[in-house]
Image (tube, rainbow, N blue to C red):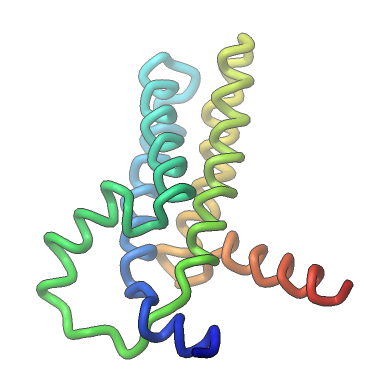
Length: 150
């Protein structure tokens, strides 16, 4: 089996990560609006934990993935095609790093980092949710090309 055939037979519904990005965008908007408060930090912990789940288990292994499978996908037609789960998983890792840096800085006493790094993550999540442009997925493709060029 080629990698392309495997992705088609074991891939994920591309609408799932986009739905997860929409849910994450809403949470990140709330974090940004809450600013430098303890509530913002706690909510960013939830978002960061979600990214950690997605990085380890893939987007389908997150609570947002469960919501999509349970509440949304049964009401939709089957997807036209499935996509490889590696790029969205890498995108989850990128989200984990960005929000994790924000949390680490907040724990170091720099409360401003919570809304700033939540804002950075929000831009990427919103691009995916609204336009289907997955910034982390694009970074994955660029990284693969760089590795292949060696």
